[in-house]
Amino acid sequence: MLAAKGRRWPARAGPARAGLAPAAAAAGLVVATTVVALRDPFQHHLTPPCPFHALTGLWCPLCGGTRAVWAAAHGHFGLMMRANALLPVIVLAAAWGWLAWLGRATGWWRWPRPSTRAAGWVFAAALVAFTVLRNLPAFASLAPPALG
Image (cartoon, rainbow, N blue to C red; front, side, top):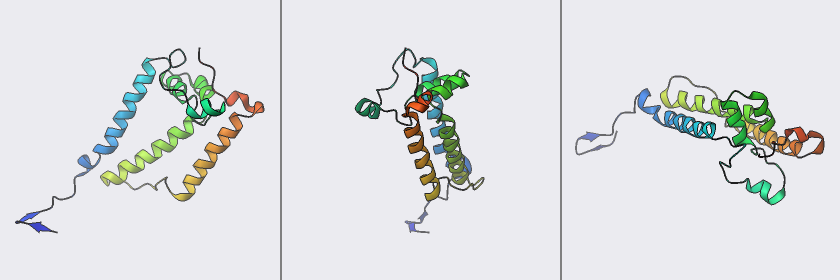
């Protein structure tokens, strides 16, 4: 270790301290979900309009996501799937990434990182496929419902 005037660099932070960043990220997500849950996005605009949809008239893979989160927070899982059927996949991927991050940060466990090149390509392909499908007339049910 590098010593300066008889001092050493501090030892690595313990598991509790190392888990602060993942805990802060989780707390931020809880706050954001609570804000969405308290204000019905089917009646009020909570976010700016999607720039992709505004420019092209097509639905991006995240269009309807705020409404899907609201529906999930209120236990309306059918409505959640109608607003954005990709939300469960996004939630599972985010949960896997967060748990892998927490485990590595604290040293409690080591899950494979979901950010490998192959996983990234699979996730990108799923986003593109979902975007294409939800914009085809035959799959109009994948488009988010109109705002009231």
